[in-house]
Length: 240
Length: 240
DNA sequence: TAGATTGTTAATCGATTAACAATC
DNA sequence: TAGATTGTTAATCGATTAACAATC
Image 1 (spheres, each protein chain N blue to C red):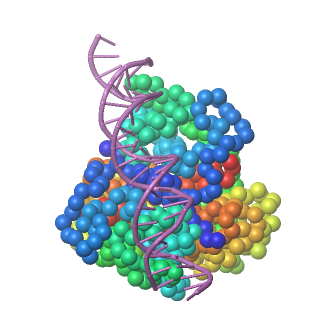
Image 2 (image 1 turned 45 degrees about the horizontal axis):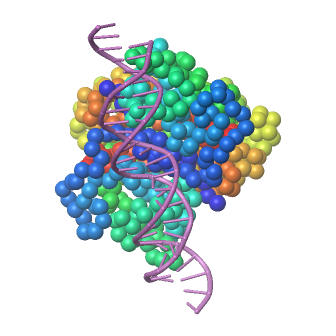
Image 3 (image 1 turned 90 degrees about the vertical axis):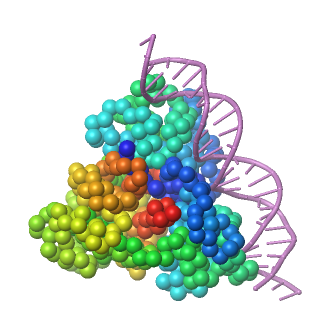
């Protein structure tokens, strides 16, 4: 019996309301399935989770996986998983399950995240170092191509494969390196200022590991990491 | 215009299927409202998120907050927020909003997380140090009361306010310190073994910051932290 | 009073689930 | 063939949203 993240309740509670969610887009793909339409928030979020589990399962040498196993690890109902997948094609084999490797590439295609994407990491403290040396981002095609800090003692040192730069170089580097995501691993007090700089530099996705509530323009998406929230939530069901 | 986490799509996608979700429990409270029943997964997760934002707003000296402001920060629809809250009482003031401090204590009461809960942190590397020195857990009544590592070079050193202990002491310390949550901040290869030890020691909630897919008994809840998943998801809506 | 915001209703949409035939 | 698991249908439940009266 595997685990699963209590993560996203029926709505992974983070229901987002980001403008139109189901408008048609240009490029179609395999033919059948809703490939030509923008995915709903729910489907996109679940597919991302399946992808995470599949990526790890592949690492562990697993060749096939059933919807029930995926369900055990994601806590998404197995019928819903089969439903989500069958909307895009018949990926599974009855009596056997899904081929892990082929399902990974199918989902990557659906999520259009087959390519490489560049990340800027802000903050070279403990958290920044932990993120820089982790595989999690790299596994999904995200590359930390620049690390910034304001501390003169840290600027110039090497973290992961990158030399730490001073924050004053942010705007230039974001453009040069084609950075689409900024990750804030800085103290709460510094977060808003750096978010402003990221926005000014044209970054549209910010990952906030600080506690600060960030104010950004509507076209910028902020994801605030909140382990304590998930813990509160898990604890509620433990206590009751 | 504040940000918000793409987090939990309409379902914070992590819909969980953990047995009965709406059975009645013993203690009733204020009288009106569904206080006597177990919260649905969705409501509990959303309330946790409101609490996170409110806690930070309180720190920033904010006295009142409207459902629209809460919506901007959580990406939960403002009508839904009012609906969620009004189920437990009339906490708001028309034309004004909600009192931040009073709403914090109301939600804490609803989530039954007013008390202190003890955490064991496994791994005294960069991530462990980052977690130990962060406020996020402390803000919500979680206390890191023990830190473990297997590295002899780390055992005995001080991280945060704790002296790092050897993992062999785990079972004893879990019992002595009444630890209910184990946080895994260790390399992927070590995660399952430590999860097994936590389970054997009686811990029922595990927070997994490694990439490992953990197999645990059904009564244990595992939350796997997955920043890359959230990033994939945010990127999809950015690219389309 | 005028403006703002809550609390609540009603309608819709999507997630959830059980069930089962199809088929590997 | 027998067992397992997918793909799909149909029914239910809860989330989402707009709208608006109540009221601070």
